[in-house]
Image (cartoon, rainbow, N blue to C red):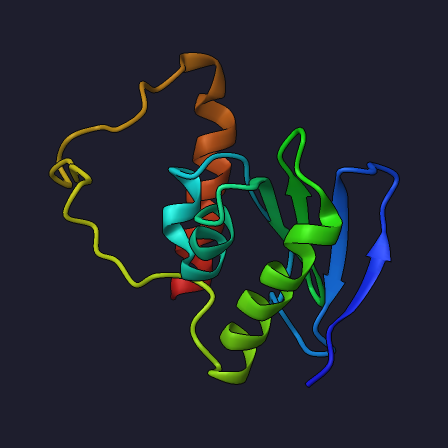
Length: 133
């Protein structure tokens, strides 16, 4: 496996192209080590101590080096982390559960109803009722 690199408009950032899909759709940006906990790959990149931002896209990983970091010194480490991840076909995101989220009972209204929206809500409910039948 070969990982290409591209310069970005930001001289502190480099785009790494692993030659395969990174994200199936959209992008995901990690601006802090805490945010990176959602992804083993992003977390490994932050764990170098030389990274301040990681972004995943369809076919790329963009890494932003910390102020004072020298790309000549950290690039081999970043490439090694990326190679290990993609060769192992490791998951991009950590599995999780919803244990930290409170789910209100179904009978509890989550959003306050606005009387100004009553006509639109009635039309939506009517459309939904006709599609269900």
